Length: 226
Length: 226
Image (cartoon, rainbow over all chains, first blue to last red; front, side, top):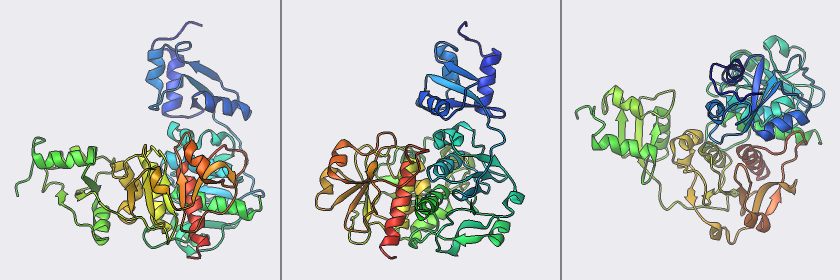
């Protein structure tokens, strides 16, 4: 195949669009992420190599990171993933807007064997490049679905909230909600959920949402006896 | 005082330099951060108000964030801060390069009553705007000093490392080291420290350094019985 050098080439535009605004397709950057995804059973639709598929200059025009890679993988966005609550708790994100936080919490959900991640409206796209980089590919190792409050029916709901009680997090068969960076969980969730506070000093008012998720999900994993 | 409109004005240049490359002075952005610092006993050298001290246009040229503030405080960088190890553990950062991670871990050190934070060479500046924003001003609520390995003498050293044992973190009178985002702690620290691993599944290889710090420092705080 001839090395593509034009920004008008449809293949270049397809990859660029999947990076900028991932819809049915998204991009993983670098050998490590692409290899990890393939090891987890995901086949790329297309592998793009610097200097081969695209000229160096065209490839570099795509790179989203400051430490450029020399390979990109174009993948189909997973569909029909199933959340399973009888292993670990299900993580629910309520308007978590920063893609780095969404990606970091997905990585934590995988690390601590959660049943999956439900993204309520207002969350950043977990397949945006910044989220993918923060998840270090974990978005392909734990079910991640878009959902609404109606999906919460049936399981007990817990939520991280500084106004809650300092109790242990649920170990399984439960939802645990983490809220927006500025305003926390929504009023509706605050009414319906059992609120869990993390014991801490009064020197700070609150923790970053990803730090709260790290602490509660790690604790849930240990309490489950894993 | 006349509202300053020129980029050549020395006061403008002083504030701009303190934001770009903080040396003896650094900048806090927004009423909340400035008020918190003043409540903690720090007096600003200068308060800069949008439309008063500087024209709107000049002020906006300074703003580092996407959610612009209307006040900036210029502060002197703290000097001669003392680390105290007999309350909580002392946090040591080894070449943690991302200012967001440095700021987040400083916030965690304050939240979980650590004795202070020692930054070994290679760490991001805790007074860079991105670090300040991540610390949410906590950099003024916990002692933060630049240091070297020699400062580690005397106290037992623990370090977060996936190759370590899954043991509890120290509660006080100890150092706990968190390493570089890519390569972890240095070989020298790895040899000298007791390595602590965080129990987790094999679905991910490692955690983000700020997530590891959140988990171990929160646990240390609970074990201290606070």
